[in-house]
Amino acid sequence: MRRVDALEAIYPLLQDRIVVTNMGAAAVELYSLGHRESFFYLEHAMGLASSIGLGLALCLPEQPVVVVDGDGSVLMNLGGLSTLARYRPPNLVHVIFDNESLLSVGGFPTATSTGTDLAHVARGSGIEQVETVLTLEDLKGAFSRAAEGRATSVIVAKVEAVGPPGFAMDVGLLENRFQFQRYIKGLRAGQ
Image 1 (cartoon, rainbow, N blue to C red):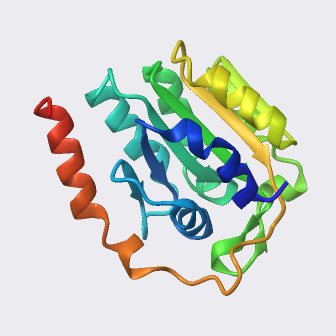
Image 2 (cartoon, one colour):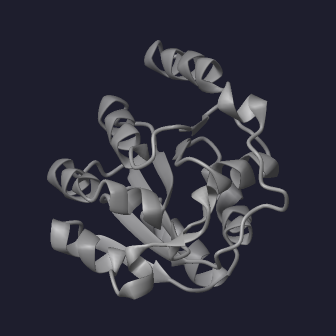
């Protein structure tokens, strides 16, 4: 399964949700499907998408939050999973695209290529709703179950180590933080 196809499969389900992406190719691919003002592409902060998503989920408990992450980013901040388990916001879904590589920074293999299982790490951290998916249909089903909002959820989606053709960051993608700040302020003000 390619990550862009996986993102396209869940894209309709991201309507009316805050979405925080990790850096790099996942952000570019989501942006290419159609930007929404509730999407925040967290650039230059590898490993912190789950932390930003957790903060938003706790501050805006009525707003569903989705974190789109990669195995390399999660491995850089494994404590993020135990922190998610500690606070357990029911409005948070953490999707981890595991391509077993640091694709956005050169394609170096990650620890998942040699046996680290992020679903087991998430369960071991105390997150109860964890699924590993290998197909688009399984991803859509897992995401639909997670989106019901009854528990913090982690979905580990095994994907191919391919990125967007001619991968390059879009300037609009990098500068969306001001638009996203206005969006969050509007939510907090009840607009």
